[in-house]
Image (cartoon, rainbow, N blue to C red):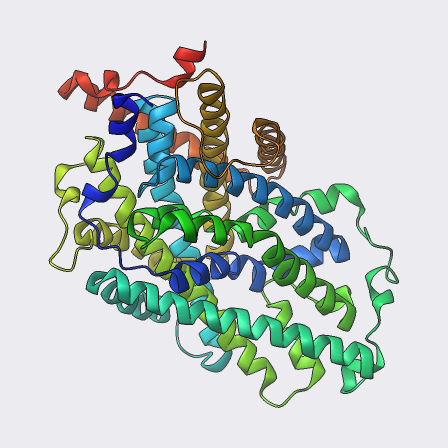
Length: 476
């Protein structure tokens, strides 16, 4: 390894000033909980109505691609663990502009996701208190989580640990109860519960394969946040051990919490009984008739929404600091508070998340759909940058320019190519859907705004665009 490689591997790691306050227990649960969110608990209702039982296959298919993405990210993380990872890898392997674009787009993704989660949390509270306006509830949750993230990374990690614990325990409980209904036939749902519900009502693809494929946008939104484990790299106590373990548990998490839970739910209750805007888990437990069961599940999905919003505040502050370190955001974002948190970055991000509160006031019935489509488009860009960076990293390793990672992705760059093709296909599906196409217009406007910002940055500091020779130029 050359001295340049050593320098590149050491910058922005131990010298970042962050507190390594996330232990193995917290990183593992953040990774587990990151794969369980509002996209599953609330968004699945609308997707079941569109695709029926075939939604199970869509989640499984997308889950394989997500595993490819995470193993690619894992290889990069162990090559060089750094907070703000995907932006930094884009900066290294594709050039400064791509690092700048990816960092700001990931920030946008989490700001918009935070809006979606606040909207979902407000909807869940309306289950108990229908007379409270959605915007009021969203604002209260926004302020509480903001306070938590300002205090310390340890408090964030602990809160996220318990949020994830609630989600995981509840989902396992739901699966066990659903299997009990299927096996022993108890409750009113037992009279109609059967595995044959997966195909008895117009088949496994009741509305055709095309309609099922159109749910992939919502399915991919459900998987947003699995990459959050990469952002924790700079604040993990032992990233070389905790990160591979967290990533390698992803397949069983997807199999159990997504494929397994949906399979059980759709066996217990036929798919035609689910409706958009209603959590299928809440609806299923209401039909089973367990006392207070629907209310308990509603509490669980509320914690899922708050968990995701909490993670959004955490990641946006770190990403703004990474951008500031690279001269691609105001230098003020580099400062850490006395508790070693990027307080200014978190504050600015929360102010933008407040737009979600406004949307809940203006268009409460459409707020969730609007923000999830934009978040998905931003997430797809982030995943594409991880995959392209991985491909270029593998080329650099094979050429002897960079050291091999101790955590190589199975299949190497081939799996990354497959995942890239899949994400481009999903983008095409989004473009074909009149309801979700608006997010591409938003992203086009975002790209223009970032392009103008980049020109302004270069005019003030010409060195910013020539700071590092991108790997694709070396390979080419």
